[in-house]
Length: 179
Image (cartoon, rainbow, N blue to C red; front, top):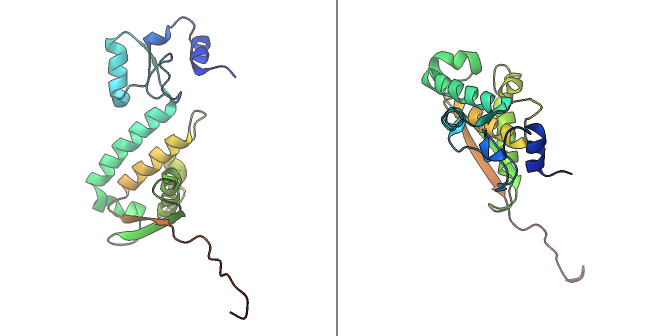
């Protein structure tokens, strides 16, 4: 399998990798490939413009930016929008749990589980399909980012609790039946 820097060169042979600005990069931080801007979507566009760089965007990057702005809008109007999203008053508590420790638990899976809980308690559960990106470029990290954004969007309607189940995984009682 070709390394990603070679894939970049094959996709954009006329653009040196050092002249490529991307909004996201999942190559593990290789110094020989294009690097992601840490400045968000608009910052990446401005960096590319000011540096005369080739700009590479994914639809997921645009979608997450739209979701973030929608979150700001919805949070600023949470009570007037309440009837569009939920049937309950106040905040409904939602809880998800997973087995593990702080070092081993899959926080992405917990976020997606919370997204499912939110969806199950919305007036229209199919909104989950709208919230989550579904592009050919979508990664698991994109879905987790969208789920976290949905949690921020719905924070006036739900409170969130994450449980990490741990303890004694197995008890063995030694001895005989007579003991």
